[in-house]
Image (cartoon, rainbow, N blue to C red; front, side, top):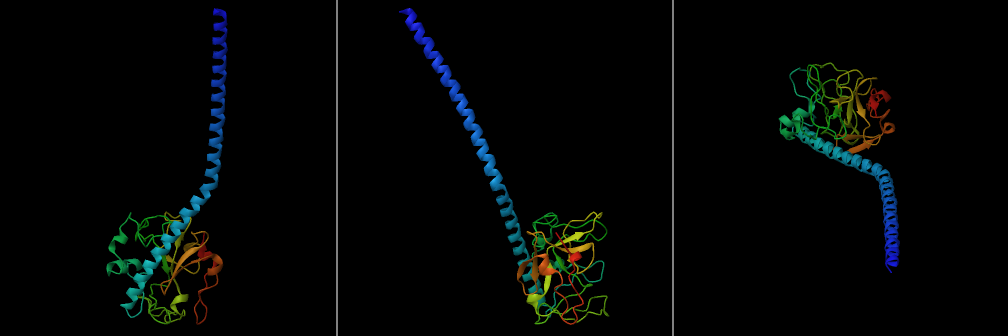
Length: 262
């Protein structure tokens, strides 16, 4: 009888041991399967998350530019239709966006160094308002269309170049760009100057020509957000920009490939 009981106990122990081993084996397999599934899901979702983040920054950028455009339009309505200049030809003068804050068209909180700002693209560098290195410390902001130190008649039916302070004999003073809705005014920009401390950071202006310097920056899915003088904002790809936006009179200005960068 005792031998029989011992035999049953041993058999049960073996059964329990086998079952425990099988349970641990299946738990390990299940864990590996779960890990594999999670890895696959991360691989599938990560590009979508990156794209969603990019879209959010692009929308924030559009909102920023629309607010900047409203400030410029209000400024122009109080100044005989003229926009802010890029910067009068005076070492102590304001830059274009500082006119808007100083005269209360935009809140002064928007030009606090190290803080988010409507003058800064959230997809650019830096992502907060700042000043560049060097003597003047050029602001790292969206770029305004550059022609000497002139203003533009964005508040009138026909946009023309104003007489720039210090450039009274400017050959292009008074030249026409057509109506405000087709006048590319302010845009995503970058200072493209390899070797410079500020290389790759946002630029306060954009120019039509030049291998290096201040350029329109295609930073949103190979497009740049562009503010037009009537206040609307549109994303423009390289093909939308190159060769366009010349002067109506003689097409002297052409946006060259060297003036756009990714």
